[in-house]
Length: 174
Image 1 (spheres, rainbow, N blue to C red):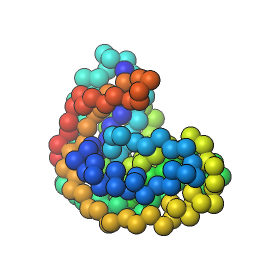
Image 2 (tube, helix red, strand yellow):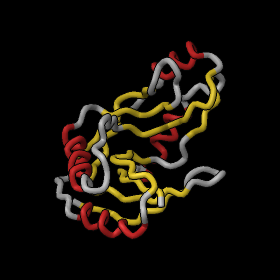
Image 3 (tube, helix red, strand yellow):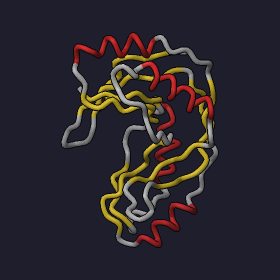
Image 4 (tube, rainbow, N blue to C red):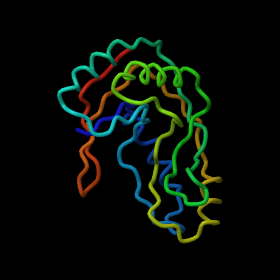
C-alpha cells in the first residue's frame, strides 16, 4: 500500500485548473495535475497491518482550524525544472500541523527534512525553451486564494498507466 497524508483541495479544482490554463505549453512538455492536494507527509509503501496504527495516531492530533493562502507560481530546481506548483505564503500553523504529524508517526517513519508546502500544477517532461518557460511562470496572474483548513486525510495512492488513483482511507478532523 502506497500512502500519504494531505490536505484535500479538490473543492478548489477550478482555482487550480485556471492557474494551469496560463502555463505555456509550447515551451515545455507538461503533464498537468488532475487531482489537487497539499502533501503533508509521504509515507510510501507500507505494510497493511500497520495502517490501523497510523489512523489511530493521526486521529489523536489536535489543531485549531486555520487558513492557508496561495500567493505565487513557482518551480523546483531552476537548473532542471521538473515541477511547477502553487506556493503558499509562510504559514506557521501549517508547519506546526506538519510537525505534529511527523512527531505522531516518528516510531514508523523518519522526520521530513525539507518540508516545502505546495500544490503541484504540472510535471515537466521536457523543456523546449527554458527562458520562455521561466518568464511565463513568473508572469502568471495569481489570485491570492485563502482556504480554511479543518481536517487532513490519509490517502491511498494506486499508480496506474493512466496516472495515480487516490482513495481516502481516513479523515482526521481538528
